[in-house]
Every structure is written in structure tokens, then in C-alpha cells.
Image 1 (cartoon, rainbow, N blue to C red):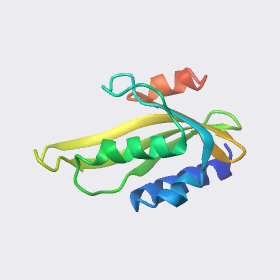
Image 2: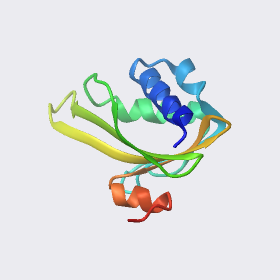
Image 3: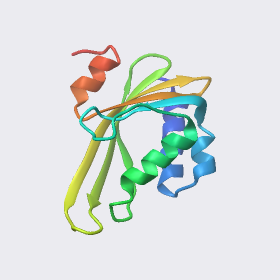
Length: 133
């Protein structure tokens, strides 16, 4: 697994957690695409760093402040990393507690994230990345 790609993911998540849009966009390819989980109501592909950033910020606005973290990283080839993103969340209005755990297939081009595909299940992400168990 490319340690540079893993470091890019760490930088991107740290930038998002502190809402540093410029630092986050710096590690995202200008032609980036994001594919949310199919079960989400807003599951159409999102294209471009600005639109993806806005989608992510809007997705977490209903939740109390908190930080996302990385769980496991899985090597899926030189330019592909499968990663588990985690966060303990509580609704701002409802107070409902939720455990966020999604698996993301990240594709890189020239050291930047160019495509992300989100999955609720690890096996689905591994299959998408060509690593069926």
C-alpha cells in the first residue's frame, strides 16, 4: 500500500475535522468524483472538490460537533486504498446516538484523491476494489 496515499487520507480527514476547506481541497483532484452509499437518499454522484466538500459538510450539519477517525486501511493496489471511517455521533435536535462506520474505496491519481465510493459493509467495499474474500 502506498504510504503516501494513506498519509494523504490522514491529511484530508484532519483538514475536514477542523473545517479547513483549502487544505482539504489541496489533496483532492480537480476532477474528483464521490459516490455516496446507495442506501442514502442523496446517492447521485457528486463531481468536483467544491461540490464534494459542500456535500460532506451538509451531511454532518445535523450532528453535534465531533471528529471522524480512521479505522482500518487495506491495500487494494498501488493507487487504491480501502479505509474504514468512524465517528460516534449525536443528533443536534434529537440527541440520538449513532455509530458512523463506513467503508470507502479511494482511488488516487498523481497523489490526489480522484474517486471515492462509500459502502456500509466491508465486504462490499472489498468486492468493489477487486479484493473479494
